[in-house]
Amino acid sequence: MNACRVITKDHPRICISGLEKDLGTNITYHTIRKLRTYYPEQQFVWISGMDNALSLHEWNRWRDLLTLVPMVHLTRKPASSLIRRCPVRLYDKQNHVFIERGGRWPLTPGTTYWMMQNKMVNISSTEIRENRLNTQKI
Image (tube, rainbow, N blue to C red; front, side):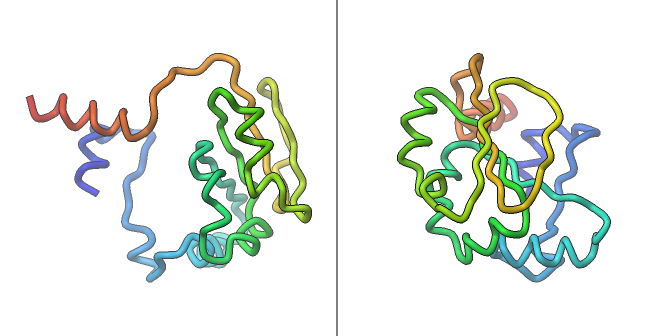
């Protein structure tokens, strides 16, 4: 948590919380279920990078998670070959929408949205964290 605060420098639009500790969960499926119970009027969307999309099938109750929230995966080149091989993409009970440019999309559970980025900064979240932490130590 402290590392997150250092990285974000207490940015006013980023909230660092121990939500899963407060909810008593450590599995994403259970966290999302509790969030939906506590905030029934809110629409939740899971946003992540390709790394999570490629390993999602290894998560606890991943198929059930797909029914709870829409997934948005930000792709990185070579996106099309990674997506073709992605186990979530091969799961036949999931709808898939490929997004080439911004706009309004009906974010519905049971759907995975693939953000096909043309222009991206080629840096991973791990590299960002390491760079920010190293900068803070100097």
